[in-house]
Length: 263
Image (cartoon, rainbow, N blue to C red; front, side, top):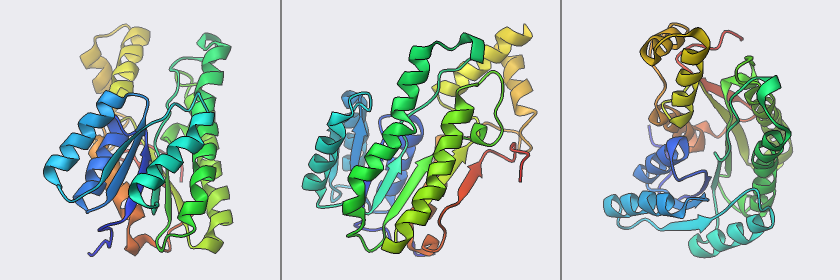
């Protein structure tokens, strides 16, 4: 299948590690020029060096961005556009959630995480939209999570944050379709990142078992029987960014090994 991604330009938030990093590397393998946005510039630079070593003709810009400082967003988008000449693909990957139950999460944590996602996602998309309108293959890909459909007590914050992301994805798809821009979400299940390690620790503590036993318990809920890798999520993102996906919009794709029970 010809993906027609060569020489496209992607802006990726949260690009320094985990899923964002994996998406950046996967898009680079398809010939996409990259703007890597993040707070950890050393980590972003490490991703950029890896891309440049493997793909010497690709242009890669590292752009500092902290969504808790919203005034930086416009400056960051302009800097990326100046460096690369525009944008075709926006991947909103920045964000996460404070792990814990409702009674355990302080107000400042709620406020902090909501400033990043979904509010930061809205701000980033709004600033990038004029550039995406000029693209012949405009794409917005929002990284959400399965808790947006199936909230759980130990991840009280993940539910509303990711539900908001899923809802915004549909709203944006309806609004941006007139410009030929598709908007979709990817909802990863428990993915082998730092957050997976945190979930294993919480489960071990709550069940009074070892980490190994907690991990086995969590994976029993996954029909395919293994933790999701960032590369699995990246493969879905590459497809949604491609030419063959041009009529897929307003959708959310679970990458969770079949764990989500809802239809």
